[in-house]
Length: 143
Image (tube, rainbow, N blue to C red; front, side):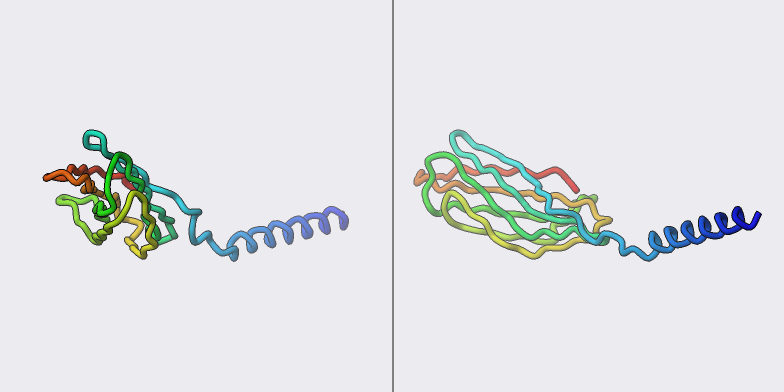
């Protein structure tokens, strides 16, 4: 009888220790980097964008935008990113604009509460040397 009682006490202590360990363990604060990607085109010109982000326990944190332009373009292409909260009406909470060549990458710091549905609208104006430069717009999926 004494042996059974000792086994029960040891088992109960082990269960209490595992419960305590799971309660005191720190929750995961951030996931690995993820990407929003999209593309658009107008005629023989196009752009593909990537927006790097991670989601913490409370926020979406956007930390880099990059793009690649295709087609016969010059060096003064304009790319715009509009960080947008999906609402009625949609709310643009951050807009950034870059001008340059065919490819680019910029580190950014844009945050939004995790509870908000967010997507990125973007547009490009392609430097073609024509009297009227073509452009396109699109948006990423939401997170």
